[in-house]
Image 1 (tube, rainbow, N blue to C red):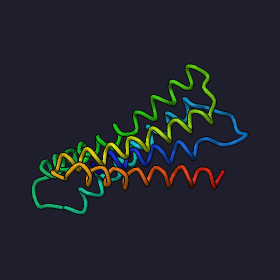
Image 2 (cartoon, rainbow, N blue to C red; image 1 turned 90 degrees about the horizontal axis):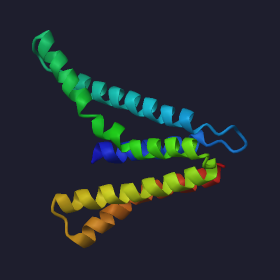
Image 3 (tube, rainbow, N blue to C red; image 1 turned 30 degrees about the horizontal axis):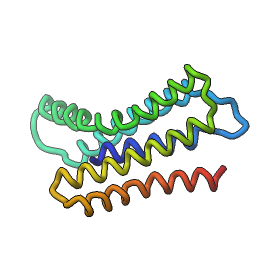
Image 4 (cartoon, one colour; image 1 turned 180 degrees about the vertical axis):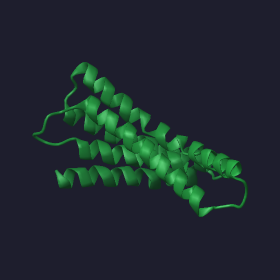
Length: 152
């Protein structure tokens, strides 16, 4: 869940930040920055986890642990793919930046709700509690939408 929520929030923040009012709209460029930022964040996060859990052992063993730590970051990168695909679709169809940003932030907020509710059900919460947890996750997406509106 951590990677899914973190990646979705990362994608939402980038989507909001890359959409500049009055600037040239470049959805393919924006999509590439979402992917590059997600991959870089995943590498940094995996590396930092590896470094904070340093274990004794051979060099080969430490490299295997590093590779494993980096591999565990794939959910964060995968969670940005709906935003990336939306931006690519926007580039192919000529969709305007306001619409793409609005739909993307709404989609990501719904995904945050789903992440929270589904994981809560999976770990044993009752439906009502799981929906409340989903709502708590969706609040992060709503905060990004409000911040985007206030900043712009």
